[in-house]
Length: 252
Image 1 (cartoon, rainbow, N blue to C red):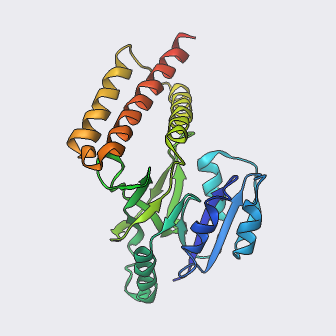
Image 2 (cartoon, rainbow, N blue to C red):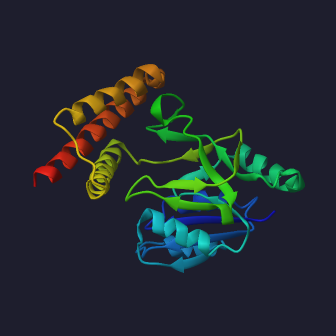
């Protein structure tokens, strides 16, 4: 049971060293697909022993599939540059490798909870947690799919759970968070419009209200203090914006 760690990058010099250091204990190879970084990203990856491949941007889905296609081992660990394998998760994956003979042939992948660091606080409530994702999977049974944003992994076979967390350092500050909301809303609207989706006049406000109530009240976002409030507020604003952009595309 050998693991190929795969990730895509573009100007990730602030995150990449931490990410690569966290996979050293269990990675049998590291494949970094870079889409033209102008900072030290490629240098950092090469110094860490990764195999760096340059590839012009194909979109999130295309770029990630390109990366796993270049992996040489049968198991893939897919990670983003702004993520880090926690020490406990790393130890859990090492133990899994040591017991590889016990892994059922029916098992196609393993999912793990992801925890976001936001304004100095680990967020463990609301819509952002536990955010269980399949990141370790058999290469021949998996493929990324989806639109221009929020790609998903399609996997055939049994999925099992790992206990410990993948850390996510997703935003530098609140301004960066809002800029991501703007970018994701635009990409979502473009994908939805191209897919023939339409939105009525109340779609934005109603979906935004539902998102806020679900995340902040039903899923306990309020337990994360001021950070939980800002996350719920911005999530609702992003939802409202994406439907407004879709509606504008319809009108245009």
